[in-house]
Image 1 (cartoon, one colour):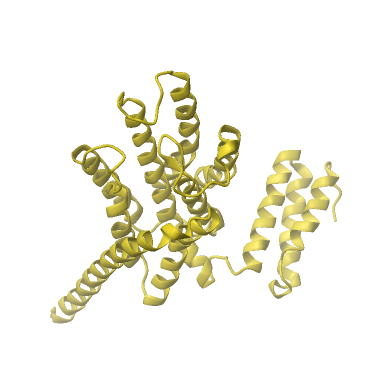
Image 2 (image 1 turned 30 degrees about the horizontal axis):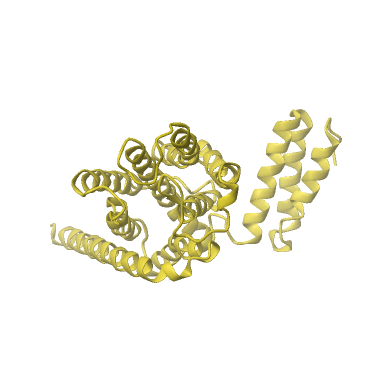
Length: 323
């Protein structure tokens, strides 16, 4: 290997190259090594570390079949923007509910001292900022920034929660952490961000307006339901709960070409919800949530799938009937 100014980067590069499976081919691996070596030889310490991290990430994707030309990689690329906007809109909903709670003088959970309100509210703002900014970056096509914000969400969310509420770790899912935020909410934000991180970066760019449509519908429904429904401890359903599964199912039907790809994308999108209650020990809450989400998701998917197929059929008939 060519000598460089930072021997540590050279050793890390050798370990990163070891992540590539033997099936990748010695020639292809040598080409990757040569390109990376030339880059880290003339780069600074941190630029070299970024190059090594890129090689390690690509090697891991190749090993686990997450590259853009593999079915699983394509499925992750399909669901990545949808997972990002779901996390962002959910975080936006949580922040809005927190502000409503903080400004409600009659809400039973808070004392009269401002310190006991402001501290948790600031912590919650820090928790939801990452997912909201991540979704915004996806919607405007800033994918490198979106991946960085996804990493920040995955790392910072449990860290902020640990520093802000160490005595609440390990409780059940139905216990609220602060301002209505639950452990289930934190897990959903993190796991949806993971879907974006794992997706191959060269195919995450959406080819349709589905993420933007999902965001618009979910935010609009949340605002409408939030302004019309009574606010309080008995308000168990929000616009996000009702419309997010429908809009997501419709988006998957519009962005996947076959039932097999749609099924794989559906399985990946359902993983955060399925894993959430398992990770936090709230499996007894899982069944009613999954039943509602499954029915709404299936409704959106079937309707959109039927519309897409009918539109395609009419377009083909119209093309055949032209002289």
